[in-house]
Length: 395
Image (spheres, rainbow, N blue to C red):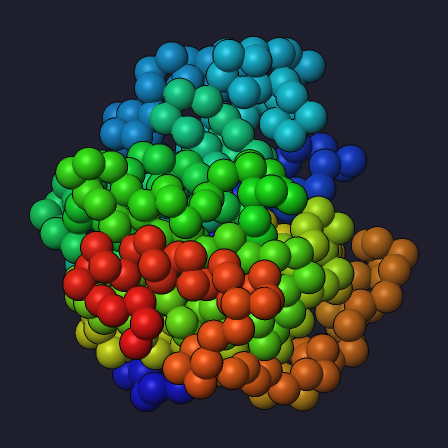
């Protein structure tokens, strides 16, 4: 990991867990609570990572991305229980209505935009909002557990301040379709999404040919990975696509979404990464931020539904890297934290911060095997997008 000297923050307060679709919903707010507890008990919040409070986003701020009709529908739905508004994606199994939905969703937006503000102003070199990363929300409708698209609002806020080149890298197992769509025609924003192929997984989009609008060819990049892709294949794909494109784009700011539902234990997806592989991706993105953007890095959470086994460990590693003091993967999880998990869920918790794997991958430059689905997927993305950036897809 590159040396990291600048100040770093995480935007959080406990009421952010009010973004809660109910006890039977996969996206449990316990993901966030257990992450912050684990980070605190491992000393992550005492080593270079300052906690700052999360404001609630104003209507005007949310409206820079979302339609007035959606905001009104979310506000109205939150005043009742069990409401349905299919036009705006509300009241579905994915997005059930809950009381005060607008306030809770606006709070998530406010938290993430504060992370963007921290980095924009230089108050923080790195800033994280683990409650954020709600990348599926569309301008006019909620989608995929995401009511408002906090990432898109944050990127738009930076553009409105004068940013000219923002790179967004999404490592969630699901395609970052909302962020891509919102900036599909804006050449100032490069969106890169590595995800399980839409042939197998929601939202069914994100193929190599989806590469940006007429005024922004090459501004959208999609790596559609085969189900079963594990650490070695995922890291091979990442390093074959992400670093060369980021270096050519030369962003002023790096924004990353860290859904950890790519893990082998996640109940909703079919990728096979370990916490160790995910940690390797976080370290790589941190180093790219220092190489290309003078360290200006905004970090959000995202998906991840294996609680407590995966999400708290993955995101605690992420926060430690944001704070400049990575955790040794072989460190034990604190006994107090494990006891809390058992008391809360009646289930055991992981004993160590590792899954016992050492991430390694074969570099793309060592050869391409067209007989494998993974290599065909990587090759398709490089062939589609690299020429649009003046890069040789065969190099």
